[in-house]
Image (cartoon, rainbow over all chains, first blue to last red; front, side, top):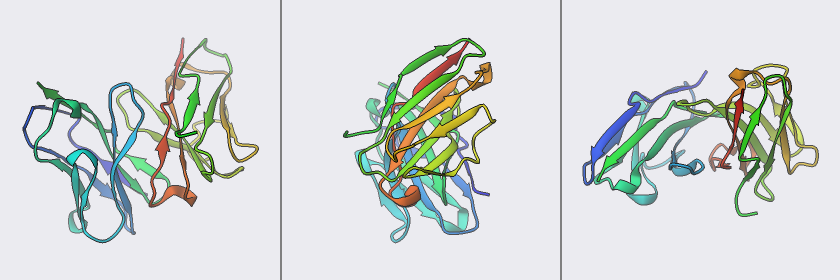
Length: 110
Length: 116
């Protein structure tokens, strides 16, 4: 069975700091990987996705993620965060259906 | 419509009451999913429709939960005899692609159900 682990439950950063959110998955076959974001009071939105090709994937709002197959990881990164990045971030694996991690709450200090 | 629409946005139910939650997916999307999101947790899969066919209901927590999509468009999630543990946000998602494997899903804003 597939599963997703997000080890950081709550991350607090200052504006302009660099961000890396960890995600590890467990699945023996080919997987499609996603990061979703949920801004306060809004619905889940797709941030970026990976299913083949270049393991470094670029998404919206300056986010990127790197798929490392040997480590079963798909970490999310952003070089310089903004206050508006305050949200909950979910890593997800789709070998049908989409399985979500428990989420990481990101708080940005102005 | 432009997005996935869910109603009501909030629902308070007395324990034992039946509730019905509606989802209006993006027009033309063949796949429709229901998820349950408890406070502080990630969404958990409940059930999947391909058009009007319910192909997977393995995530439904009990036989009190029932979902339908009779014409392959709007879907309703019904919970009978609600219990306090049913309190959660219920999310609906749709995808143009069968099972949404690569395209991912478009989510609605959810219905927050509180059972008192």
